Image 1 (cartoon, rainbow, N blue to C red):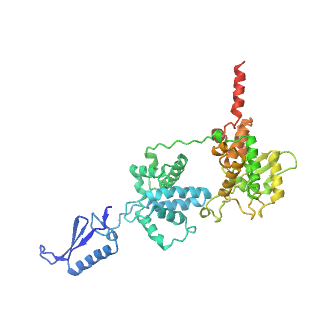
Image 2: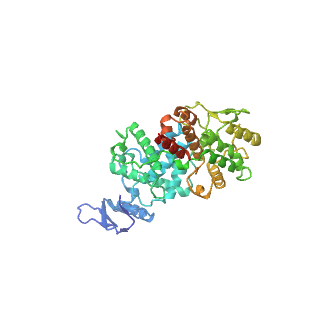
Image 3: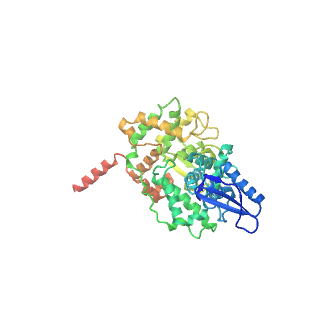
Length: 455
């Protein structure tokens, strides 16, 4: 719809070409002159008064009909708008989704909803649109923040401008949507994994639309689209060897008064037991068999992944979930070597437990935020590595300790099925992602090949 604010009105005139008395209202929208003939002067005055009032209130006038937007006939029923259906999608997924999944859904829709809108005048700023979506519109009832008066018009614009979901039957609209998910919120080219995650959310939303009979088939299936190339494999340059891992764990003792030392055992669990950060966060003393000598055992049953408070059921910054890729009450036993047993026993003796029995807690008994764990890790790397190593991707994040653990087990000849069991992966994923040699093993392999060539 094309609109204009350039409007001019003329005085009412009697229609001299008609045998019966009638009156003509004339006005101009842009360069187009419009008119309407009414039976009585009172009706004509009333009609002109409505037009003048709309212009005085700052309404846009439609160039095609000459009418202000508020006087246009309602569009024929076309089913839910994309925004309305996105809200249905969010509400349906909320009950069974983890907090991080809810956050991923919302993040994808932050890009999609503003893109699937008509060109109505008065489009709000992009940051305002995202704020309203993030804090209100893309949350289920009962989880929404209160919308301040200044943002009510932003929501109204979104609700009015959102295109019908049925418009995605058109391939050009689908291509427009795919273009929208291929860039970041700042308009830059998005990372391949980010693009694929957003497309996956869109695919799930449209599958729900198929179930609801809005579409006969998923519109994404009818559009040719080449997904960006992704790299699933762990880069060997990021994987530390055992000597480097020990230097990192020792360096943690020298970060801050107590924060680094308190996190040391948590980092050690990621390296020696290949725990994910959220699994370490949920580790309870009751889950740990820590003998004075020999190997111990961790029996994992819970994870506490970090998430934005607005997406958790508790309103806290960590979700309380079962293990990843496992049934709700399933467990995962992980034997741990004496080196880790000793570190964990020392940790319990020195720092005790949180009130609920967790091993790893702040000095006030809370959970460490993901940002706090990363900040300490950056300081650990500076203390443990050379400047060249600090500048490299070697163990750039704490998660790199888990990669190092699994790579070490595979390089040591542990059967893939056993490694997959301990790491909480399928064998297929394990071999595709983690089957890498740790730093230094390439040299050993070269020696073996050289010896074989001499025979």
